[in-house]
Image (cartoon, rainbow, N blue to C red):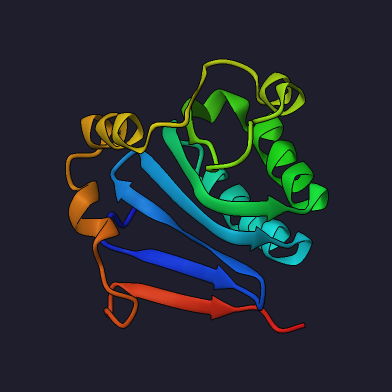
Amino acid sequence: MQHPELLEMLADAGGSVSFGWADPGVFYARFSHTLSARTGKAFAARLNSTARIGKRFKYFADAYALESYDLLARSAFVRVVNEHRRLFEQIHILAWQDGEVSPALLSALGQPVSVTHDPIEFEARLLGAAPRARTVLAAKPDSPHRTRWPLRR
């Protein structure tokens, strides 16, 4: 079931990923700092569970605050997308400030994929697909609408 009012967070000492339904049919993920193999694999497992529902959805990945990521984390994500590609109606990526999305990653994800370095463009696309996203994403960390799943070393 899709719950647009809930965002979850996975975190470790290096970084975090917040994710959830921004609106029905629109799955959102925000990555910050360093995405470790452990956090990335845990996120991929959650995304895989979401995809197993079997309903098509739009995926928005906000990597603007990402500084680095482990290649095992990226591989875990690519495996989920490849396994369930027919369910990913669209993939939108806001690239990190100082980095480029590798051509190998874009090729592995398939089409359609849109990548931007412009947060305003990304937000416009997100709000066009998910009008309630602004409210969902504005939830405070201590809000009952967000749960935190810290990963221990």
